[in-house]
Image 1 (cartoon, chains in turn purple, red):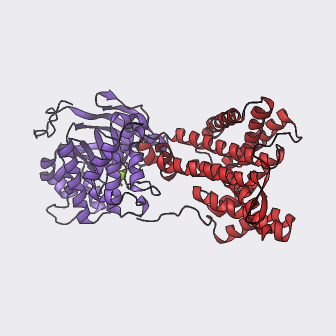
Image 2 (cartoon, each protein chain N blue to C red; image 1 turned 180 degrees about the vertical axis):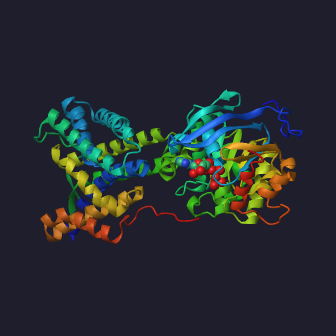
Length: 281
Length: 290
Ligand SMILES: Nc1ncnc2c1ncn2[C@@H]1O[C@H](COP(=O)(O)OP(=O)(O)OP(=O)(O)O)[C@@H](O)[C@H]1O
Ligand SMILES: [Mg+2]
């Protein structure tokens, strides 16, 4: 990695840092017929936080599953395009090989191991590292998330949603990722907790120089902590840019931040109406 | 009173072997969601493999045990790789059919090589009698209880302390999440089958030592069902509770009522439980949050 930990924000440019992850014209099909990603391209510069936004069903989760190699478990397949991670084409690698190379995913809905304790969840997170000494990483995670340390013997299935989300992120950190992918970390959490989660993401990015790709429904929050943002519709990127600019973009304001001139949050039908106008498509 | 003590010892010894047999069944079900109808035949193959090495090849006890464990491991791995793995994604019913087919094949192979007559195997555990709380009981039954307890404790330790054990439980909980941790699900499946075959080997050898090296050992596979329904299909501690309960129950019914009734009592328990609690009495609780 040659880029500085915090990239200088140059409007509309990604050349200031090396890209840790590049997705080129990715096409993904489920069940041999359902075309979900239609030539998606994006780049995640090293050391940055990148937000991936878009309405329900746009293909955000599918993108992360494709990057982490989970598609085969859902009868999905990459039919075109490529995924380059850390200079290597990982498009055809299996999930475990990608984790080994430093790609970690926190799936939508947390997916903690319910019957395992917090401690055992974290041990499972470091599984592929074999006999390597993981005590230091355990300390690091407990340092970052002291609440987990106090509850290490508790069964994960009984934790609150916020605690489970923190555990899911802590578990992903045990793999020592270079790129942490988070699929809707704020899903179903109370506003105060959402704030905590985002602050935490920002903190691990700043302290550890960890590159983050985060999917969010909560576009405003995401753009607050992100360096860059991508907006997806129907399997493609329709708008991209520096986070601050996206936040000020009138279309984004109107359709994703609910701050349009007409006032109030837009309903799904209105978003559809906007699609018919095809301004970004 | 002395009758009671000896019934308890016999019951616990039977129960310990039942628990070991059920352990393999639970391991497979927990990790792979396959209901293995060939568990009894795993015991059978284990007992005959040990017989082969100990009696036919005249290996010393330790080496014979190692040989048995190696063959059992290989059997588990081969069955997983070539019988079950191609079936991943098939319906539960077809998988069950295949394990029933597997049980016939294993039984037929044993008959082919060893015939159907009872094989002579010198006793491994001492058959002398010792007195316990006023009752005279065979030493080998007491040792079976101790050995099974040791094996079960080792397995429990494996599941909570070793990272492979934790990975197996993680896969049982959430396969997709396990994949995102770089845990290889096929490897965990293979491990589950190999461990199941090894625990079945130990159960089969202990059983053969208490009774005889014969085809009937496979029938133990059937009585595993009341045990796991009682203990929970996916609970390792449940196999101990279920095994000991069924073992003691059989002996008490046999001793105080009727030996014939004792044979059917486990299945009566099975039906009763299925009517009241379809997921078993001590099964892992389904955690429902969110
Ligand atoms: N396993 C699957 N099989 C078939 N179709 C799928 C599968 N997973 C997702 N899809 C379809 O692909 C499309 C994109 O789904 P995806 O989960 O990637 O969207 P998303 O952007 O993450 O949406 P959300 O914001 O609701 O999470 C949807 O139309 C969905 O129905
Ligand atoms: Mg999604």
